Length: 274
Image (cartoon, rainbow, N blue to C red; front, top):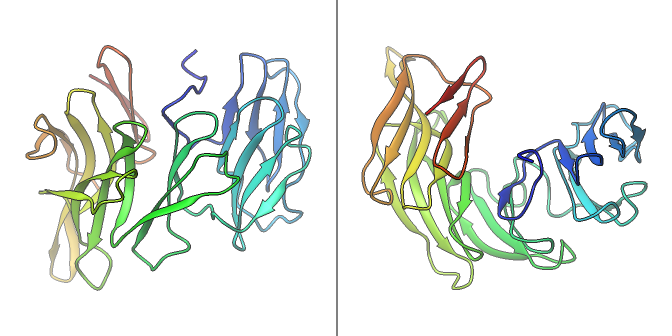
């Protein structure tokens, strides 16, 4: 059951399970595949764009076997919506699909963050309440939001970084809190000891984990990399390192947790469990 998406979840996968037998996944070029027998056989859905010069489908989500959407990042055509189970798609240029962060509240409401339509290094916080029939642009943040999680249906907490050097190497990193309903200016809290931020993880108790990288500039080169997991127990006011390694980074990383507070952190070659 851990594979099945419910509500209040991050959507960043290239597959989507409706139930144990029916799911969709991406394939070569921009093909979308469907199985109704648990993966024994697959049928090819609409070849979303008829070209090999395209990135694979990035995000797939369905409410049922008919109504769904996916994103493809190619030539400003990003958002694809279907009402016939992916046999055909309605193409939309906006919202675009580049580096998108997306959270599902319910079958119709989503909160998402996008970058293509704004200045370089900025981020736009938007939402839809009608399954992307329309969407509302809420706040343009002058930093690069790297990850976010839900506090409730209208409030989010995000990890972001703002460039502080011309080489796009060093960043100031922050934890931000934003209320979509009030559209007020976000409350930011500085995150010390890291130059790049990648992921955050929120507990229900006001505790946070984050993954980031710190390094130094020595003789016009960047050295002494340290990839770390930091924890805050006071809602982001202070942080301490709980795991670190002197390396450039943990690649393909993400946090997962269960209802009992157990944490699984995945990087390129290891599963680390707490």
